[in-house]
Length: 98
Image: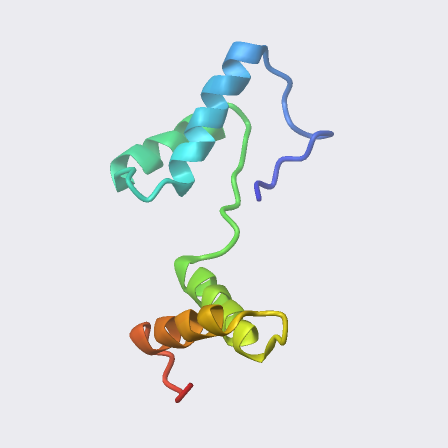
């Protein structure tokens, strides 16, 4: 998820690691304000940690929709779960009839 690896990441004491981990967690928390996220990025950058957030929200939505579509074709998925998948796809504007 982040671009820092164990071999190139700076080494910090346990407390600093936990604090920096909290800042990293803020970046993915939907309830965190954009100002707080910007501050967290600044703190992490100052600590020598560049964070790659991975998927954008559009990519995430695409992945979720693909998972529900796959569930419809999976013989191991229950009828109830397939009904839920169809409902979810209809609600979220899949654009295709399911």
